[in-house]
Image (tube, rainbow, N blue to C red; front, side, top):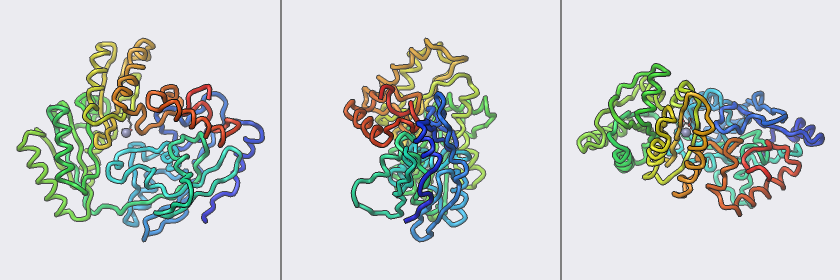
Length: 416
Ligand SMILES: O=C(O)CC[C@@H](O)C(=O)O
Ligand SMILES: [Zn+2]
């Protein structure tokens, strides 16, 4: 068994004195899960940044919670591997925070969620004792899979201090296609076509609407080689044989162009152009922050309904919003609906909520696909979870954190 810490002293200190603790990694979350609400003590993982081991045969990495995602990826790339997740915030987010929030990101379509790739965790509980579940096994059916309780629990049940994670081989060939589509129906049809024609080499299918493109151009001065379409899609392939992958991609592009699914596009195979095209998508969040006050929604929906929420919200808000934009991980059924205004307005918020949540619940969607509930969304959990489920969550919380000192006021509705 690996052990990185037997007892986590600051926790025991806080437990004995009834002091509340706010675990914090890179502090890049979007729902206020990593910021204190009142007088909690911030417990930063920044100094826990040690790589414990990497096994080149199995591809299993064991590291401490404070390792920065991008640094881990760089370390792995030198050995012919990559991290199974990639986020716009990779330069500052910590792997412990990624696991605690079950972050999704840009590679989920290919490598699945952290619930599948995380093999083990070390977690410190509210009383300062360390729970050693830091297994590095692909298969282990001995009892309940306790680590799953902590993945996505946003530090409310325990603090992730070390992670064991399965890492894929670094793909030898990566291609990117950035395409323009004339309607959302075409975006969907392009997705089904590319999934059928690219098969196992498809590694990302992202979409953005023209408003997003306008904002990255205006606020970040990025320029797109593809213009004049209401929707854009970014398709990434990752494989082991560039000739084979390019042939597949070219066949798909020919079909997509001749059948009118896409009207314009560009392809990149070299690193520099690939990075520049990814920036158009990855930096939308940053562009939005320059547009004014931002109201953010991270929604899972049946993929066919994904953009209807943007259209309906835009129609409802009319001129009271500055911009209503939709983008996200279409391949995962995950929409990022963002609304901007010159300044914060209570009446605008009232027009957005609960409208967006009710709309989502009507189609059995999730009001938080990949960002978590944190402080900002915890009161809305009932739109996506049955009351019995919330009650059971509250019982877990009471059992693992009887003093209520672990990231209080987060995830579960107040009163719990
Ligand atoms: O800012 C957002 O709404 C989404 C952020 C992130 O999840 C992304 O996919 O770019
Ligand atoms: Zn996202």
